[in-house]
Structure formats: structure tokens, C-alpha cells
Length: 284
Image (tube, rainbow, N blue to C red; front, top):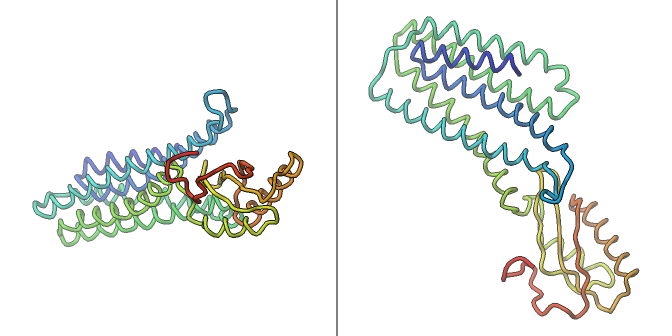
């Protein structure tokens, strides 16, 4: 990680000295993956802290918050680079293509070395495979900058630099937007995309003893941890033991069929007047 951070710094300095926006955008592209790895490591450390009275869910959601902040910053920087590239299309500026080429080659070699180290483990680990794919994108970006530097040096066409900047910035925004969308959904406690609440209701109402399911809430605490809570109306006045068995049955069905790992259920008998699936008057 320190190695990639150093290379990113070299690219940023090289981009400033050579007046190459493409080199700076390539550095930002590398920085995005470096920050993602760093924030994932920090979140992993922070997430190990035990829950307390102020943070009863613990600190695992720090990973989602950090992803949101990271993606927001990258999007803002990329939009600025797009603006600068448009300005340079209108008013071209000279680029020191020799220095641009040297620094771009350094970035390319660094990405290739990182890919070589990760290649073997990428076949056995999903997380390493994801990092490997990001590195592949960084490497292709570096190749584009190297080719661009060569073309500028040979042809003198200055619009190549802002064109590369525009393309790389759009790639970063596309990646960041997906992270922003997913992290926002989680922070807003939206239902996961794979969850169909109507299907869940139909499945649960087929269980003997259940009259209906209402006042449902379903959200993600983390990207892989889904919570579900609901009121369960029974067709008879169950005792405590029977209602406990019903909760166990419901929890097992939700876990096996819908990948829901945490359930909170309120067993009722002729109690709620409002039996809508989603409580329209707010949280219940």
C-alpha cells in the first residue's frame, strides 16, 4: 500500500510538472483504489471494537460510511478534472511529453508489479480477485497515458491529453457512482435489491398459525448483513412457548430462502388495527 501511495504521489508531481491532466487523472485513478484498500483496512480494525451503550450495533458500519466519503471525494475531483479537460479542449496548453512519458511508464511498471504479486492469490480469494480487477483497470489506464504521451511527442496534438483525462475521469465516476448508490441505500436503511417483501409475506403467511404479516422493515446493517423486523398476526392466542417456536420457524425460513441473518418479530393476536405491509404512518 505504501508502494502504491508513493507511485501515486510521483504521478501527481509528474503531472503538475509536465502540465499533463491525463497523468494527474491516472494518479487519481490509482489513488481511488489505494484509498479503498486503506479504508477497508481501517474499517476492519475499527469494526473489531465491541458494541457499547452508545453504539449497540458496534462499529462495523464505519466501512460503509468510509466508502461513501471516499466515493464522494473521488466524484468531486473527477468532475473538476472533466471541467479542466473541457477548458483545455477550448484553450490547449503545452505538455512536457517527455516527462509525461517517463512518469507514465513508472506508473505502468508499478501496476504490473502489483498485478504479478496478486495474480496467484486472485484465483483463491474473492477479495484479492476484486483488488486484482481494480489493478487491471489501473494498468489499462496507465497504458492509455503512455500511448497518449507517445502520440503527443510524435504528433504534437495537444488535445490528446484532455481527451485521456475525460475518458479516465468518466471511468472513475462510473466506479464511484456505483459505490455511492450502494452505500447511500445502506445508510438510508433501504431494502436490499435482492429482497422482495411481497414474496416474503406470501411465504410467511403459508406457515401454519400465521394470519398475516404487517409493519415490515428490512434493511442492511452492512453490505452482507440483512436485518428484518415485522409484526406477525396469529390465528389464535398462542402461549409463550408456541410463539417462541413460531419465531424460530420464521427465522429459519428467512435465513435459508432470503439470506436474512437477523430477525426481530412481534407476535400479536387481534392487536393491530393497521395491517399494511409497510406502515404508512412511520416507524412502528
